Amino acid sequence: MPALQWLLQGDAVTQATALLLLAMSVASWVVICWKLYLGQRARADVPRAAAAFWQTRHLADAPVRVAGFDRAGLLLPLVQAALQASARPGGVAAAASTLPALADQGSPEVRLTRALRVALHGVLARLQWGQVLLATVGSTAPFVGLLGTVWGIHRALAVLAGSQSITIERLAGPVGEALVMTAAGLAVAIPAVLAYNGFGRSLTHIEAELEGFARDLRALLLGAAAPPASPPPD
Image (tube, rainbow, N blue to C red; front, side, top):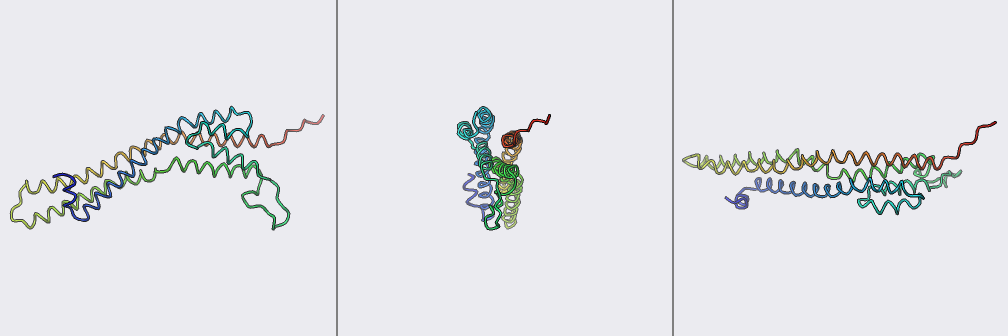
């Protein structure tokens, strides 16, 4: 029996289970394709963009230089956030009515650390997007398929219970069709689980490079803002 004909002959529970598995499969494959595209760019662009930044002679020219290599936009937000934080005024007004916002208060080191942390979390959130969906699909799709199998077997036995004669031939067809739901659940779950584990390993290296760049950038800007050490007295 063709799959479409079997699905149309099923009841609401069977059809809903099959459509849910189809939606989970489509969603997981969309996430997998997008993360493959982003990961390929990130692995190639992050080292090149970092090298371009450190080869820049003037800090003000760094965003333009980095943007030419950072196609995925993973390193550029860190550079822009650091430059904006270091350019904010550090003075605090005396009157309470003229106090700056809390984001502009504190020492330059505190403002720079906060700006880099916010930018880094935004970049990491982009890299981690879809991981929760892959984990959810990988862990729940087999049970959704099992639900369809159990319900299909229940329907098959209910139909056969009303007949006067029960043979293997009459039972094998409906039960075999119900077991297809288990195979469909596994077919949806296995790619999602493999992709989740694979992306988890590859993203770890990219995240480490971004965190290391953020620490080096913070040290560079704090070192440039620090006053020169005075010579020791004679």
